[in-house]
Image (cartoon, rainbow, N blue to C red; front, side, top):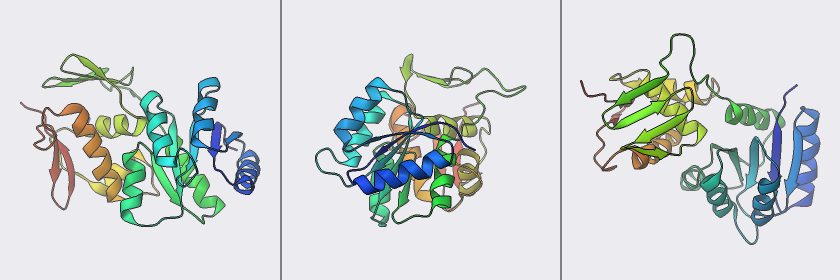
Length: 230
């Protein structure tokens, strides 16, 4: 059985009831909200480990709600969408989601996505450095914090884990599949758009000029490499 607290945000009562029954059976504590506005209020009063957030809702839509949640919280977020176009998926990730799932979906698929979103790499294992520094960037591994040019920078959990993986394999071209499986889990491997979005966000937070990255480099047709100056 799993454990954790999940907030289901959907304007359809039947979907909320089905999701509550399904997730409770799997061992999760479940709360729900009918709108993005209600979700923000509930997150003020109670802590969730993950938010299942529908894209299409009246009032504050899912993307706007995701951005608002992400502005103040590192909670895991999975977007629920009926749209299957790549642009829509990228928009979900770009708004701050960790993952997305397209309706209709099966219970095993939903559970796998939830486990992947809640998955956390150990901050510092045996022999791992407590901090990693390169140029004007310092990663505080144990505290899961980032300092860039003397300023503390907030990262989402997936952004942090992607950066940590690259930082512990400096100056090495890491293939897309290896990165996806290291950060999201063994069921992933072909979702290259995830990496494009998350690397773009990391570059905005780390690089002096994100359009001409100094550290987070693309290896065409292969993956990504963290360049650490010698």
